[in-house]
Length: 340
Image 1 (cartoon, rainbow, N blue to C red):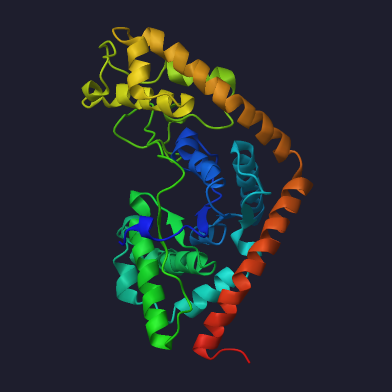
Image 2: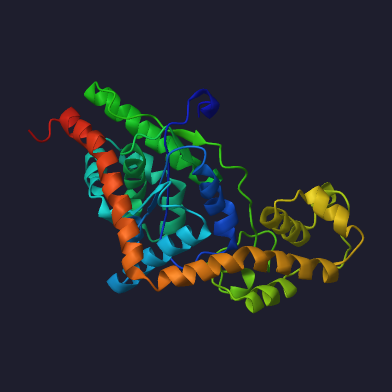
């Protein structure tokens, strides 16, 4: 992967699947980074409802999930007047470009994708074509807007590399420079890695059967306090040096959450609580989380009750995204000899 610092940031794009409630890990690991990005570069953020077709979801639930995710993102700080926020399915160019890129992508490339191997498991014959073709649609999502950069985590690097491979092969096959090769975006500050409240070695996840393992953005103040109070810890007091938490995953997780929520360094937090146990630390962490999440929940609930406003904002974003996508879609068609 090339050095992203060598390329000026002209446009950043990222997407999120509208499935289930957002939790603290989503907020601190991605969304607040997106919020900071808005002030650093032109940004497009989309709700990846076409990607959700890899699993069956009833139509009414999918529509509700799209609105719910839009409300959660806006409540968390995504500003539709700063960034382009839209639902993927509202811009038909995503699906159209995906089909064109299917002529460039190779079965061998897709069969080696980690996500395909993990999600299909031993039942590859029973997995949907959408799951197998997911990376090509993701490449279309990105290449359509010719972004200079795409924010990625460790689990997405393979997808960006595949997108670059598809773009390179398409350009070579057609003798054009239709697509810009995207690079990883390193702005927006450091994304926090938030772990389960029940197991400090596992990421916080909505798929965990225990609701006590995560802080949901819609949790009440009382629920937040109860989950932190019952979060797994160890009996040792907190040290003054963050390095001494390396072998204490639950303690390290809670201190890391406090740092991410308050903006303080872990060193400053530990200096305040050095020698004290979690009986003193947990109430302070709960108070910090309530202070951070309560305004988001209030704004989310207000937006959830106003479908017309959510639809207006998503329509506005889709109109802008369609306008931005049109030149690339036309260039791809011409490169392939499609259309007139």
